[in-house]
Length: 174
Image 1 (tube, rainbow, N blue to C red):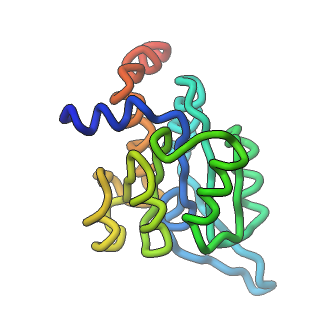
Image 2 (tube, rainbow, N blue to C red):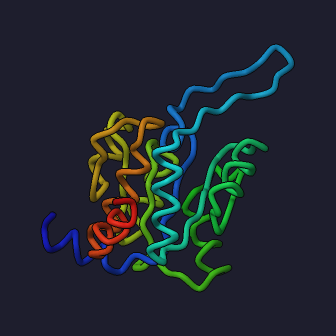
């Protein structure tokens, strides 16, 4: 990890996640009654819990609204949830206003064009392997894993590694 990236990561106090295409594989699955199914990866869930143990607040900003996301956010202890927000940058600015955090303290991970402005606005902007090429071109970092398959966990561990706290948190499991 280079010094410039470490400097950005050391400022992070808030990690923000998109859902579809980051915490899920981006596929939309609907049942005959119109209800939606979302698949979340437990690797990402533990990564989010590790962030909390490391003193990092967490948020979700997603363009869609679903009770599944609300349940998952609650189960993981996500601090802030903004659903139905297609303008991610506006939602991010509202999050900063609501919480007192700022761009220099924020990391954001997204995968597609609606995330681009938010990724460019924060100190550490990230995307997933397989995300849109324009998003990848503007991100500070790209996961090796794909969306819904541990990319969120990689994001979490990258932040914690840059802050020098990952090894201690992992050692608790030894």
